[in-house]
Image 1 (cartoon, rainbow, N blue to C red):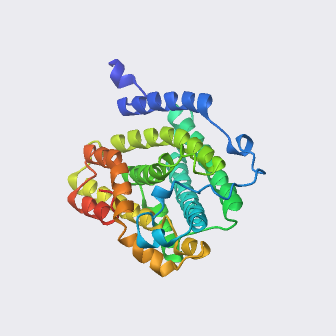
Image 2: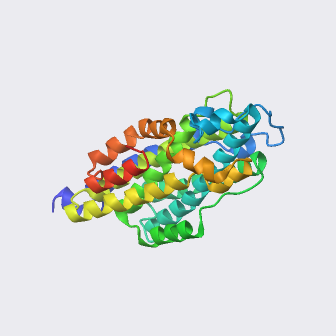
Image 3: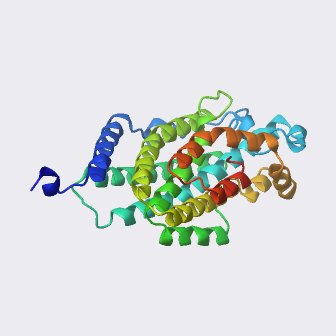
Length: 304
């Protein structure tokens, strides 16, 4: 037999192991812990925002122009708390997808070890977001029951490329908001630190998800690829649409109905999302997951 025939690990598997080894080494060197790094007892400066004003869903609207500085600060704090809470929601979905994928995996392989490292990271991120929400606004924001049920459907039905493409899109969406705010001195210092930690550690997770997607779509039929593309885009639509919950506007003291109406037509916010999703769209196009129907769905939520 040739060496290829006697090998117990396929070429794609070895490729994933090499990537996983590098990511494990990165996690060992660079992981951070917000629970010990942040002094959660420090008071919040009343002038600091929860996110950069330009990333508020209402920035650039008539409603924003009517708000006082104090109202704008309060709005951005509730908006970003909602974004973090929706982040917790889809990070819990993500953890279940990865656990299911690795349930009877090859436990000795680096891929399995990094998968569990990612789950551990996501647990810490969710605790970090929960702690930040407690400190900043003292409440939680969850998707509606209907969207929560759809999330369960995705948990139970997503497989292979759909699973990891969904993970990638969800992580990229949150990454977009955090990169835009993590070095802005107008933002609360502890929120900037949270953004830095999450962006750093999610970069490993997104690298892992991209490699999993590339491996999953290799040799996939056109029909299956089209299904995967559309299913992923539908998930992205729900995530983007639910990032800032209506209750967040009400809790900030705004008219929630008017805020939602102005958000829907806010060209500034749409342009911010679109310009920061170009890298994600390029990757999906590269692997054949930016089909005409998927493109149409991404356009509906201004990701393209």
